[in-house]
Amino acid sequence: MPELEPSTDHTHLVDNGKVQLTLDELAAIQPGMSRLMVEVSDRMWKCFHAGMARNRAVARYQLSQAVKILKASVVVRPRYTASMRTFLDEEMTSLRQVIEHERWEDFEGAFADLVAATKRYHEEFDKGYLVWKVSPEPPGDLDLTPRG
Image (tube, rainbow, N blue to C red):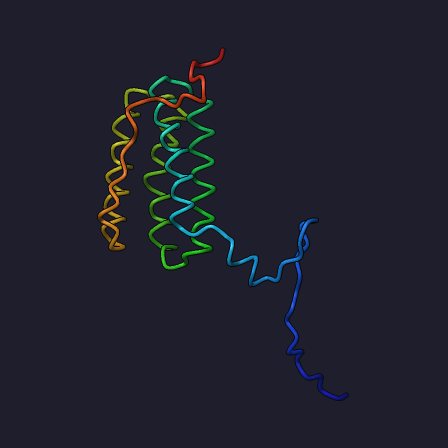
């Protein structure tokens, strides 16, 4: 049987109904780490204030969305994979357990540990100038009053 030569044509188009994009064009418009971190920050800010309001449902939801974004972030920055896995397995899991079991007396401490870990990771990756903190103001776009 004759051997087949591998194809050198690797042009694939993705159609979103308005435009056809090559895979390279699609990759170029994917968010990088800085854009993803803005989304994580927003979710964690809302998680914090929901936890302070003892709203388990909203705190859990915001945390789970932040985790999904962080898991996706290693696709665009694989060098963070090991550290991100540790962060998710330790700090994020610890906070999730506090929320799940409604140990509100431990919430601020667990969240402070998470913020401190964020600072350590930023320093580890030469981004120590990025010192994240939670806005003292609760989000104006959500009613954080716990529901029945």
